[in-house]
Image (cartoon, rainbow, N blue to C red; front, side):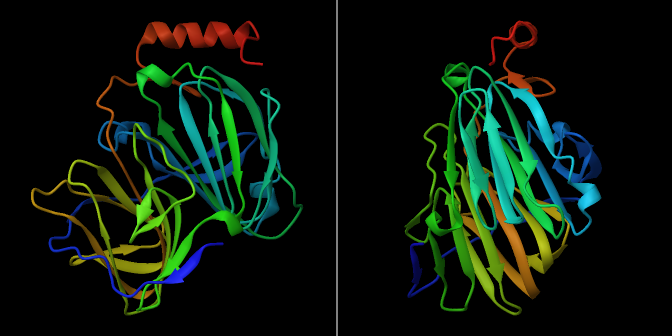
Length: 291
């Protein structure tokens, strides 16, 4: 793992404010995996290019043991980030991999793929996230691809105050992340913020951004954000980034990206630009043209 201590914090002169807090909705997916759907379909326009964020975390194997058997995707990218636990990925394009503690799997569904994500544990804690990132219209029918990113390959750094930052995608404080995507330029940071410390991150003013807290509590400006809540960051004129301070030791994701500004048509695991493309996706899947 690339790891370093930075000499100084990234300067943010005017922090973004919190537009609103989102609690998310209890849900289940796959063969009955219990999760919290934080970024729901009604927020896709506001948080373009991001389509969905699911958070899961439990010590009860009954909540996750059935996993996610074979299911299709078309038109976007899935990012599965495991905090604790192990999931085996297999897909119709011939890819297979194991994502475990701290690791990430990044799959580009493109023109279509059928895959499964199944737990490789029968007990203990499983905690993680799945983020859906949209593809631009020109890339929606690209060839599927897949990358396993073990925890040891995710660049990280520590600020002078002791904040630990894992740069899954994009770049932070001069540290380039494990993944780069040209069209949407996603920033995906996994933050561990000790109590009483502050973390600053510059953000392009046109990017949509949010913070999801999954441990402890932090504050953005004068707005406290507790564990299990997402703070949507306002696109404030003149704001050049975000500053957050941990009231107690906190774990959080900071996610941002360039909006595509294109129509979004979704039917379950298919995300295209028109209803006609959705109909074609369903037909292609039923005809076995996704593997």
